[in-house]
Image (tube, rainbow, N blue to C red; front, top):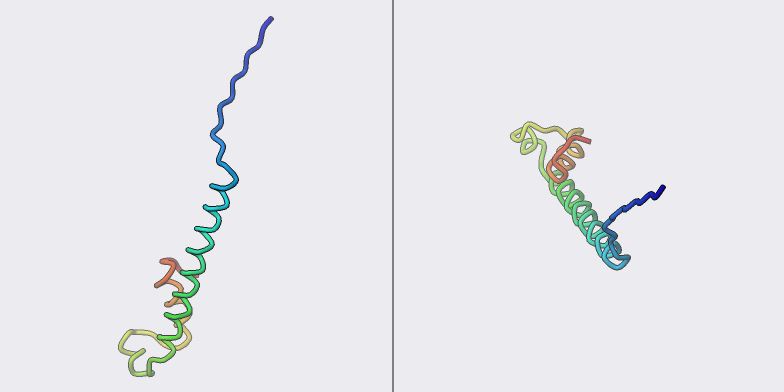
Amino acid sequence: MAYVSSNRTTSISVGARLAEIGKQAAEAYAAWRLYHRTLAELNELSGRELDDLGLNRSMLRGAAFQAVYGKAD
């Protein structure tokens, strides 16, 4: 009895994979920087300005995170 098996997989080269990892790392770093910049700008606002936005100081980290990443932490 003969048995034939054929598996086709698409393999990605090591160079392409490293390039993808580098791209993902650069995107994550850019988002991290934007989060910290947003948080710094929110921290510079006065209490009155925060009230106008409906925020208080304890909400700033969550607001910055949601603004950058689009989800609650």
